[in-house]
Length: 548
Image (cartoon, rainbow, N blue to C red):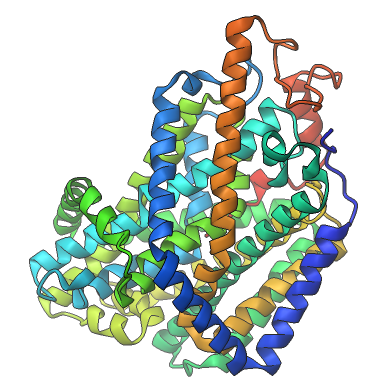
């Protein structure tokens, strides 16, 4: 029988922390050696299995389409008579807030501007209108359906097994149909540890990018040096901020910070849209979508080539791996807010709607940067080629009230850093203590220090290239875990469909994973269990968004 969630610190926590400490020591004392090992591992993966990332993510999308149009699409993530906890508008808002953050701010300008100067696969003449269209097409490809499809597979699996099968929400719990009670043994613990390290490297990459971007912003606005000591200072200061939040349990404060962040992000985006070349941005959005849809299959086939180019390694493969490493983090949050929805509704809401919102974001920021470059007002493309973190602030400085909105962007990045770090301590704490709804202070502080240490070490090892390399390498084993999660989900859905066709299911409002009690058998129905869950913890995952 699967164990219920508890707050006990066990082998998963101790083993994960021990390995993390060894990694940090390795990076600090033997920096060049770690860099060499990373490079060798990256070369091996890209040469032999780089294509697999594209194949896996494409398979995830096909799997989601199949589930959505099949009879399984009518299955609810909860009891048969249960309805969604949040209305559509709130749900869509929270879905997108789970995805935006440090990475959207970092890459919103940097990627389209970079592709304008160095076009994907050299397919167009740099700086031309055709290059601008190709740039947006590949930016959409990297941040579109594939990214949200990865999150959707993991989130759907967690939500199904937690709310429909009444399990504890751990990654390993989804493997019950495949390995039975061994999910409670070494195999299950190994799965959870892999998930923890996928999150660790994904979050560390985001915080490392955030430190780089804050450094670039400070350099652009105030003329501070753009170097590692400044980045390290940023990490230390903001780590103290999110640790204070984690230790004091300021859930209300984090909730307010998240709303402030979303409001500032929305206002900043509207300002850029109207202060920038509005009609050009609308054309960029529409043309980008058309190019993305018509070019999706050719782009997928090109990305699955057995010999990855250096461009592909730096962009598409990095993103594919990053989405996999972020999946346990963002997916847990998405699962938590999606209770009561049908699988079909979930897939459309989690994959399609945030994808369109992402396209809008990149069209506004990236389109503005490309227009500035092509008009000769500011060479954002050239700046991005040499200094990715500074490209956002040079773009903002080129608009009216540039200094003021650059300061607003600095504040926005800082708050995203704090909310991301705070959310990560919570999620990692829960993942390492058998799904505890409120990990204790020692656990959260430990993970907070480790996250910051990982970010600092990766920047020390090699800056942006090291962040990208670590993500690709760390995501490789967890991508296999996600494939098996999809298999397990399909097995349970098929079993449920067979049970329904042969007669009514016992319990009515919840199903059972062999040996796992249903909600009814626990003494409370689906709605009752929700009340117990939410009242048992002041800081629920809904209040701590998983900012990328």
